[in-house]
Length: 100
Image (cartoon, rainbow, N blue to C red):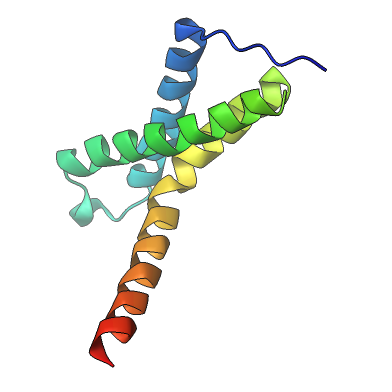
């Protein structure tokens, strides 16, 4: 089982766009009064970040192209809530660590 180590910019860009769409779809589910243009950009940016992490993990483990695309879009969609949760956990940990 050989892993291809070459970088395909077209493939990375395609998955980045797919992940950004996942982030934008997440923002579309927010209540209308909470929607702002900056939230769509942030959702897309975070989606790309999370999606590309998943893309590179999938490439490393030689996951099929269809499953990689699905997981990339899903990571873009759930990226914002997962990052928010991790941030809350870290803040709580740091608060407990430095308050004591």
